[in-house]
Image 1 (cartoon, helix red, strand yellow):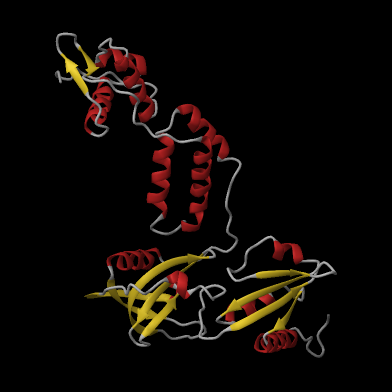
Image 2 (image 1 turned 90 degrees about the horizontal axis):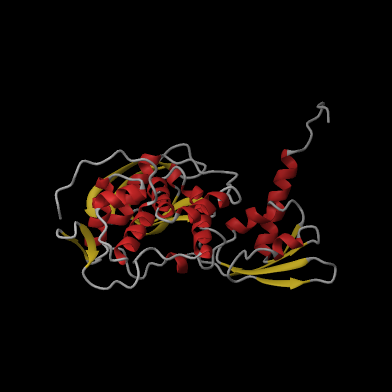
Length: 339
């Protein structure tokens, strides 16, 4: 390749892939274009042209060569098509939706590299497609009403230790406790479930896999030991019979009747892989589930504020009754107060 002349100031720069595609088309003509000519046509510096051609030759394996006698570049053999990113409008739209969904990773160490990757893909597309992407950005969004509060330093250490299989010592506070305790764990998996992060780890104190909320970890220290994650560990199997993250040893057949005021909300979602819906004559609907724990389903039923009635099992019926009585007692008007 000839010595590179001084580069001219860059004016309006086109996306990288579009520039290389234009260079490819110029080479296909067999007119032996040189760097100065290409730089003028594409409104970039000759330095950018040399860099693009080098990328085309070394990274895309295109047979680009310089002919000193013709003072220009050419293909040394026939090239059928340019190996650029082929993407349909539907695929691009799906990428946009995925990029918007990244908001659930906001505040974590995944945010910046993921956003950067999507931006690079968008920048590599032709300007006409990038324009459509910009228009779509105004029409789709994701919103979370309650964002988890995370200590980014602790979360970053958790993510790295989980990926590298490094044993950790945690200072962890369990729900409802004022004090914290030390736990030595092998971090198996970090999962975002319904917008919240959870660490699934082997707890050496309990000699079992337990669930930890990163927000409750006060300190984290590598022990210097590594571990081998058991092949039999599967988060999907572990949570198969749970209603969220709590898996238990029980086997419960759940039946809940939702009145006609909220029945459509139940019909419009798949709440659990085991669910069955039974339509009732009055417009209400019965939801049937198979679960291993009642902890999360009880809280969920209470959130329907009386529009849901538990039919089975008796343990869940009694749990709802006691919780409702406690709530009613908390709202009893005190003697002498107004209201």
